[in-house]
Amino acid sequence: MLFRTYQGANSVNSLNALTVVLLLFLLPLTTTAVSCASVLLQTIATRWDSLGSAYQSEICARGCEPVMSTWDDWTYTNAFLPLIDTMATEMSLSDNFKSTFTRIGQDIAISTKNECSALLSPGQHFCTAGNTSAGDKLAQWNWCFKKQAAKQATKNAFTMLRLVSSEICKGEKYKYLEDDKLWMEVLPEYMRRYADTCQLPPPAKEEEEVKDEL
Image 1: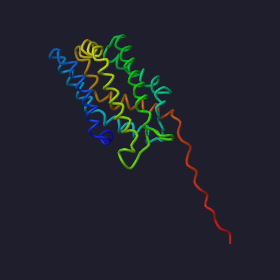
Image 2 (image 1 turned 180 degrees about the vertical axis):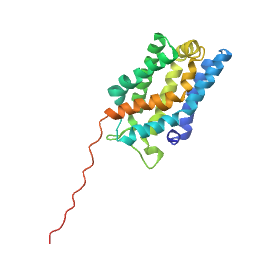
Image 3 (image 1 turned 180 degrees about the horizontal axis):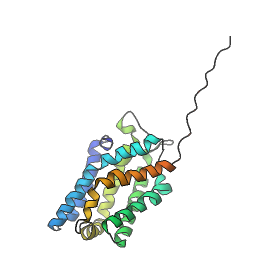
């Protein structure tokens, strides 16, 4: 339940804002598209916890210390772009879809870096835990990220409407997004790849016991 612990009301409001935006996109569509919309909204509403748990077990538990610059240093090239390619292949999406959602993803990343960088004090990282929800940096980042994603979704409303309705909601392509394989295998695998290459902190040195000589 990682992502439901920090600023509960605000986090829910941010998620609801993104959900409402997508719902408004899909209201004018056909019955098939309504089924598609239901899947997309359900996915957004239910998958955050599984990603948070995977991040904790695959990255934080292995001693990694991801920070804002990790997006530019590793995630964008080694996870985000390959994920877009995988989704485009699995759902037979166009090159225009890929390029557009790559741009939107970058816009979300830039907005997140600009608005959320202050969450980390010097020496802190996203795996920094605390005794209170306010000290849980991963939960804080997730809350801030969802706010920025909602803003960008609103900003790109018409573009997303056109692409989602004409491509993701065409036929049964959207069902890939509700498949457990995407959320429980594909995404955690990218986390493992990062954990295999991240720079781990040096091991803590044990203090030598000083024995008084009598």
